[in-house]
Amino acid sequence: MPGSGSLRCLVLNGATLGAGASGDIALFDGAFCVAHERLEGLGATAFLAAICRNMLRAAAWLSGPDLIVAVTGPGSFTGLRASLAFANGLSAGYGARLRGVTTGQCYRARPEWAQAVCVTHARRNRIFAEFSDGRFWAGPPDSLDLPDETHVIGNGVASLSGAALR
Image (cartoon, rainbow, N blue to C red; front, side, top):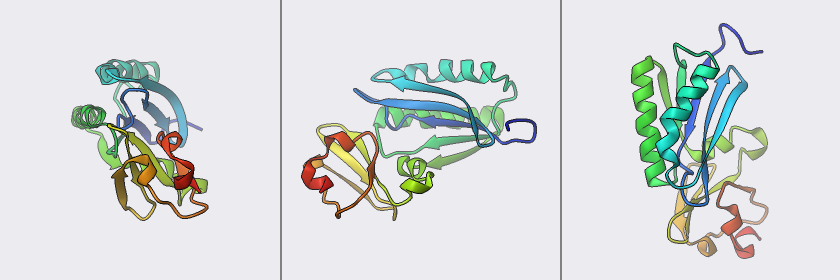
């Protein structure tokens, strides 16, 4: 149960912001998600500060979080730049620890997705692929070659052809 002594964590994901995509802000008290807001589409980064402020107030975290986790990508350049700068400023202002994680690390925190390939939208009909061994790949969706039975996750999965998904 959430409560005193729990680690209070703010998670910022601006990596997946952009046209037709969304990002996230979440508050965790220990292992429990106490608040979550989805940011939709282009221009959503303009609302990061206001949404975060409202969430922190609603959770009565007046002294702020203990830890700020910011998604470092791969993903939208503008979303990343805005959310990482915001995370850095919040960390300095609250005196909170700051940790960066990749989009794939976020997904792979779930045991059933530990070996999954994370596929994220990029611009100009491209995708980013992040493999569980730490490798990254970028290119057109039809050029991604994955072994049979590969578990694929992320907001770029729908852009993959049957050849990539075999």
